[in-house]
Length: 186
Image (cartoon, rainbow, N blue to C red; front, side, top):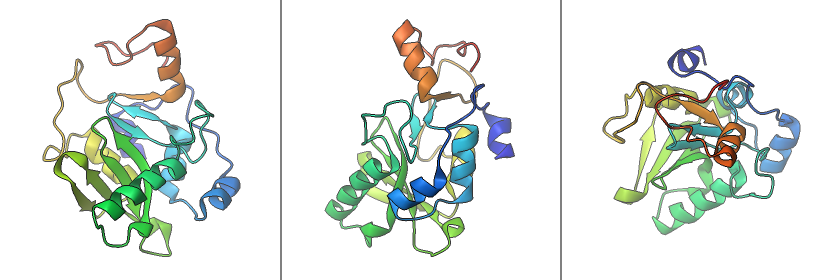
């Protein structure tokens, strides 16, 4: 997590407060430690207005059940079945991009710490696998080490993360959080 925090600042007000016992029970599985720590430090939100990370329980938009792990996992399962992915039941989604790419964990081990990243690329109608966990994948994203997958044309240098609560407040106030200057206090 230190590597990610060195690359992109976490929100000033921290991440989400998650009752992990309830989240485990509701989702039918435990979560990897890197995801739990990410939720604590960063929480639900978006990198560069492009790559969103979903929470197990929605704090900011409580009526949007689709914007949770369970909601995105249903999307991933449906997509994987349609694309004839081997073992779609092994996918647990954790994020998506504005290009409708789905970011998942491939849960093919009883140990959540061994789960790797599976990425559905809508534009190419294909799945790609990465032998790393979510936070390592996000580090590679923030360090722009995934150029073969995504290219960026941003109004600012580096990478920026905005928690959904701050994004919601920015939108309500008419502020663009992806402008050249970051939002104050974020």
